Structure formats: C-alpha cells, structure tokens
Image 1 (cartoon, rainbow, N blue to C red):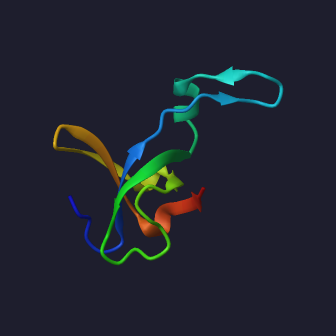
Image 2: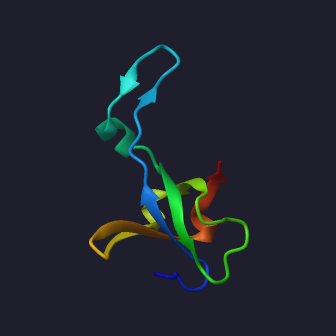
Length: 85
C-alpha cells in the first residue's frame, strides 16, 4: 500500500483521556473531539513533513476510513494534520 501525492495512510489510536481533575473520559466521549490521534502507516509520494511511524493528530472531519488487506486504515491529507508528536 502506497498513498499517492499528499495523502497519508494511518491507524487510529484508541485513547482514554484523564482530565486534570482526574475524570476519565471514555472512548465514546473522546470520539466527540474534532481531532483524532493516529500512527502513520505510510506517507504519500509528495508528503514532506511527516514520516512513517509518526504519531499525529488530525481533523477527523477531513478523513475517511477504508478496509485494506482486512485492516481499517484512515486516509487523510497532509494539510489536515495539526500536530506531529
């Protein structure tokens, strides 16, 4: 699998978030956040600022999910990545 151009293939990371007050937010609560966390599987041929294996946050409204080789893969554009950890 090799994305073309500025596209990125990533795998979502399910995360539990604990607030400063100690409240633990469930996966369903976290799903309501606009930005999602993922690990990059493959970067497209024209992606320059992100590498395979990077952990990123991206705008989930600008992505879509595909099944590739029986695995869920999220496809997004480099421009929709807001943070690289």
